[in-house]
Length: 286
Image (cartoon, rainbow, N blue to C red; front, side, top):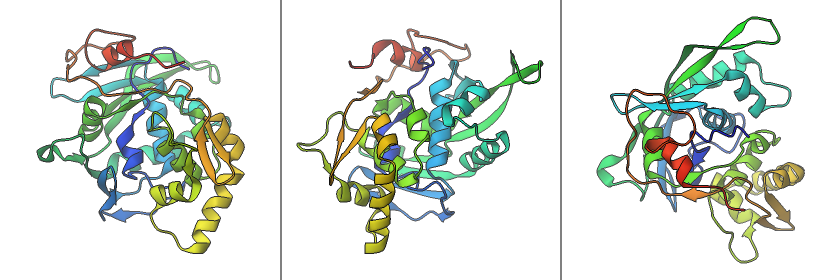
């Protein structure tokens, strides 16, 4: 846990409209529409569960945020904390930079009932990542390391302002072995309460993958069951052919108001305006 709660970890719509492919090895897509019960999306580029891990980690560990004069949001992020959140063994910085490039270059389009039809989201999830003048001591080299200044893309900014916000520690999800397990868990965590007797496992697989051939469905079930312990650590429990939520550590869903926060100034911790105000207004359920 970071303690600052500068931004939510994510919002509900990306997992519900299958923005990130249910695999850790996604293919490049050319903008085919994916239709779900919660809206639809299309992606030109490569977005999978590792990209979701990285985006959630940056939002989770963000130390400060500010709204720029043109309405964008910038975050101050320590890359070392991002790596610790994503993996115990630490993904290499080179691999993380590759995922950042793919996050930046992917063009997404989302249509959702949460958004007016004339405000369809179109653009990138992040605009750029650059070194900040702020530094932190690097115990490995004895020198200093620069923090990152991460500028969020317009679609993500609009989701943070309009969508259902989710607050949870993304580390357990990032440690799951299989992308299908991550996609199922992320979808489940967008719901405030499970249906009676939980969700049907096959139904969840269909929700996050679409219609699968019989062998692909068997593979998906097998991989999810191999991740049973990791799912439990994330609060998602397998019970035979059913999936339930044991607990929602840190998790709340909340629809923010439309109050914008003051451009130009960095904020850390709860504030009276904008993203930081959301962290003050909503506390995790116990």
